[in-house]
Image 1: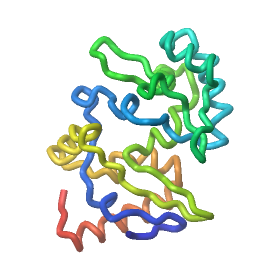
Image 2 (image 1 turned 90 degrees about the horizontal axis):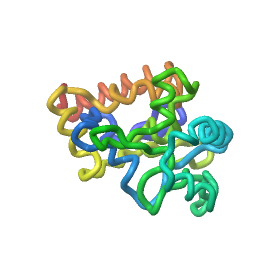
Image 3 (image 1 turned 90 degrees about the vertical axis):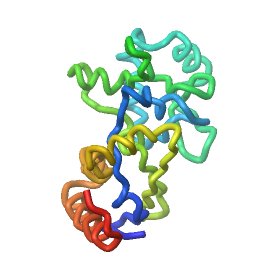
Image 4 (image 1 turned 30 degrees about the vertical axis):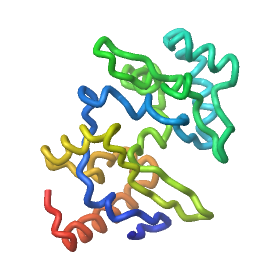
Length: 195
């Protein structure tokens, strides 16, 4: 484990090589799992707005689920986005190649919405647990979901710390990110891991 400001990170975050490979994984992280992505309280109003703006573009089953149970599930100790039948996030649609897409992110890419997606989705495969003022960051590597991304990262020499640059800066700021990169470099050097 290593510490950067108020965050405690597992060493594998520094050494893991990763770059999403959507053509191979088909967006599995948005589809597979027992629950939806965790969301922050301050994200809920933005998600409600996204739902209203994108409603007509979303799958009929997603609309049914939200009509019946709301957009946000409070079943766990922290709020999560609803999923359809313990599968896709309600914001998932599929492209012509059957790749799961986040409709919020798609609208953001098209300049139709001013927010990219929930932070927990942006940071995946990192998961954050908050304990008081400390944030514990762990790599949640599930080979069946992210094996293709790990293979691509290794092949192209991309570290997870670089791949998630935008998400890390969004979460913790540029000063934190620069300090984090220095710490990652030191850990790689000690472990003999080179790009």
